Image 1 (cartoon, helix red, strand yellow):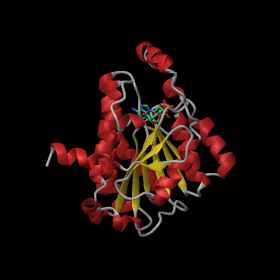
Image 2 (cartoon, rainbow, N blue to C red):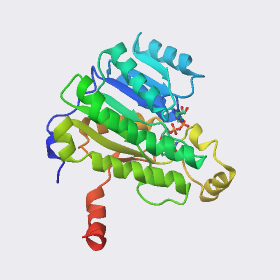
Image 3 (cartoon, rainbow, N blue to C red):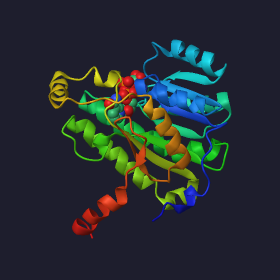
Image 4 (spheres, helix red, strand yellow):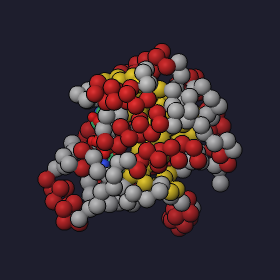
Amino acid sequence: MNYSASFATMFDVEGTVAIVTGALGGIGRVLVRSLLTNKAKGVALLDVNDTQAEEFQTSLENEFGANKTLFLKVDVTDFEKVKDAFQKCVDHFGNVDIVVNNAGIVGNIEMVIKINLLATIQISNFAFFDFLPKYRKGKEGVIINIASVAGLYPIALFPDYCATKHGIVAYTQALGSESHYQNTQVKVMGLCPGATDTEFSKNLPEYYQQFINDIKLVYQSAEILGNSLIKVLKEGNNGSIWISKNNEPVYEFDYKSETLPILFKHVF
Ligand SMILES: NC(=O)c1ccc[n+]([C@@H]2O[C@H](COP(=O)([O-])OP(=O)(O)OC[C@H]3O[C@@H](n4cnc5c(N)ncnc54)[C@H](O)[C@@H]3O)[C@@H](O)[C@H]2O)c1
């Protein structure tokens, strides 16, 4: 087991600064709110869509007070703009401690791969090796990658999407190994939502919509993911992967015990 060192102290969200991508989406909004509810100092909201940014910021200001958020219109596939946004976040709030890679789509295959997988890897790498070691306030930085239950087992829905989410889970575990943590004191963890009621599930290509109707998929409320994020931030071990589905309390996927037998059978 290589997770021990990072669990000694519980991560404290109070006073931290977070960057959340896809922050104006159904899950993104809940994640932002949960961070502020838990007394984060500030959250940078990165999203390619700015149509409801002001309205969302105003509602957060009414709920949590002034100057808690910074909206930055950024396409996560434009890596130079992402780097610029990270710098703006530090200039504005003074530090950055948490990065949540949440932006994700279904649809055009190339965009699915770029947004879900490539951007998550590039942003994590950048946060892990550069920004979080340099600009975090406390002893540790944390990266949370939003994957999916479709990243744990090949679910027939959206094969290309499924591949990107598997990639995120594998990448998260590999970067979240103790040897990397020793160099940077940055934890990397994955949160896998099950089917969740957001716009995401409402604009699907017809083929997949039909598929979903046929299997009578049940959606959980996005609200559950707020508590899930906070529990993972506070209690998650480096490299751990968590499942948040069916409105149940989030729980850790025992990835190693489930996959090691496969590894020994087919690899070693
Ligand atoms: N809703 C579900 O059923 C479900 C299930 C499992 C995992 N997820 C994952 O949760 C995450 C959030 O999904 P959601 O349900 O909130 O979807 P959503 O469609 O409600 O929100 C996605 C947000 O990402 C933003 N976005 C899209 N492309 C972007 C880009 N290139 N750059 C920056 N922002 C971009 C959108 O503008 C939107 O605000 C995604 O990674 C998704 O794969 C969702």
